[in-house]
Image 1 (cartoon, rainbow, N blue to C red):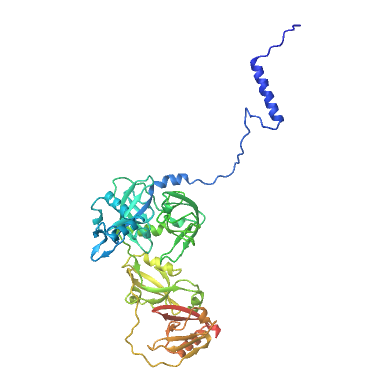
Image 2: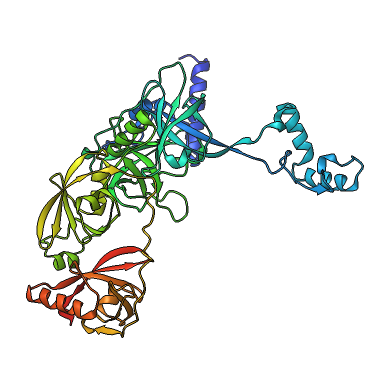
Length: 518
């Protein structure tokens, strides 16, 4: 046997040394470096939420920011303080005048005289001779609807503007001009005159939009630039009191200030509505936003593009909803339709013979659900068109032909006739069954309510002292006995309510009072 010491290779020593260090580390509780294969990370195979990236990528070039400017006249030429010193202005005072030195130092602390001089130097010597300055007044959103530069936004975004700038999604700024706007639906159309082809989007058939459908809102919230939010359709047919044609789509996508005029898309990249309002106690997004339906927008936009304005059919009536009490008093099976409180003088309805107390139940054979439905149907028709208006009158249905007029911009209030000589006042009379005390009107037509009993049916329905009862069940009344006779006849016919036509401050309305309370 050889007595030579065993030789170890350098590689073997290195390996055993590393192994020894690793063992020592593990023994002391310090983790050793891991070499070789790693354990796999946790991965859950679950249904993935839909991505809106494809939709957003396709439609974003068509959505723009709209910056609106207005010409405002400065109070003084330098835009600062305006003083008069014996017929001379501040600039006319000598440089060593103590008042000039005082105000010069005073205004300088607020970015005044020195800054204004620098601004004049930057703009040039002629800048102060302009009659006014163009300043930003609002900023909203919009979207192209044609390849030649037509775009849609809200009327409230542009209504105070004299100059309009469209900012594309790539930051390009282009001038635009106003084509037309419509205050009643809060829509406006602008046109960019540029020799290029614009990416544009189309309107969807919003009748197919369902509550619960996914939607994507694109716009310019708070002036930040193009932003995208997603949500679902929360409701349809919302009336928020914005105007006579309210029929909003409600969505829960985050819509904020600056989103006005921007589009809400379906997942096909079609516009289902135009964002126009939010419900927000704080002014920020709370998940309740309202969009003008595509069907409404399409019709209005076509008129604005063709003529710069919108012409609507006009019937010329004051109307109110038909409640269940009113339906009962009139013998209507359903509480539907629009109750005419007063036809306007010389309006199409009055000329055709439509009277106060008529209930409009259909137009050209299409049922009328309520006053808003009637307003929308008439507004969608062309002025000059002759239509069939079905009314419920005296317990039966009649059809009246009406040639529609053109909706005037402003309708003057009807003033009462002041020419009739007053008659001597008469004693009060009571209508105990309704909790009313009345006296014949001085004009000889109608009964003036002098008091309303607390907790009575009349008080519950909003009748007040000073209201004038014009008619009951569409029959004119001049004294309390007229009312009693009409009520007795209605009770014999099995009616459970009587319809009172009441006027106050030149406004007429109908109130149904229950007969069986007497």
